[in-house]
Length: 137
Image (cartoon, rainbow, N blue to C red; front, side, top):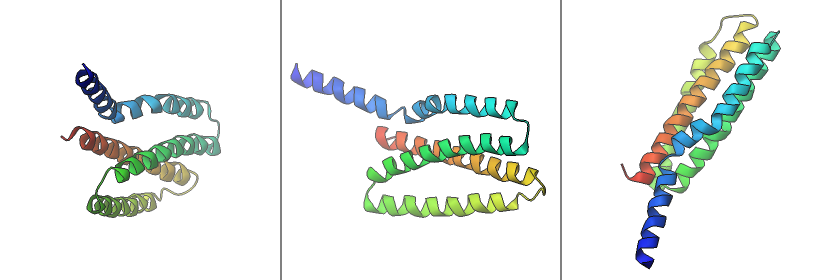
């Protein structure tokens, strides 16, 4: 009986970790809803940028959380590899942001939008990697 209970506890804990990506998406729904509301009620470029930055900051926080989770579950070689990939991703993200030169006030909106989209994509990639690591697939 003890072994059966331990087995169930193990299966339950694995299933919790295996859904990090879907949990992340659920956690971010209220953030995205608030950002959408902020955008739809904005009357200036400054307010639009504030809405985008709000959402981007929340995604960046999540990116850092999942990055730390991955790092804590990887071997030294795996950590070095992830660190190098992350550094390349940051350079590429920054390059994409720098390419946004629409001029005027739209420049701020576009640059922050690129930061948001790139951060969101990378966060989801890391969440998928974490799920794969935890399930062994």
